[in-house]
Length: 91
Picture (cartoon, rainbow, N blue to C red):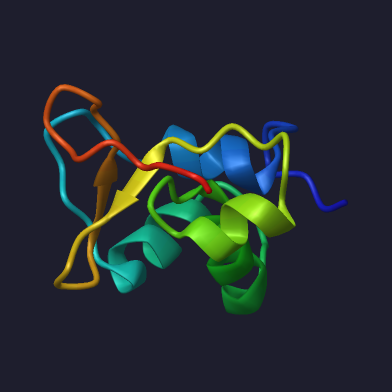
């Protein structure tokens, strides 16, 4: 697994690339994450899918992964906040 310039994983680089009050597009995430390591766009895209709370098929596919992103209806991302966002129910 490729590590970032400071030894972090792609998921860790994603998590540290967004602040509580930010809403980021995929391109903004790519630029920020690539400044932390040499991951491909595809690797970043797959990690973003894996980390989204409200992308239910991904939650089934990557069981046991800490999801911390919320995918908005406009395709942008923000940190998931259970007080602000709808509860995601898995059947």
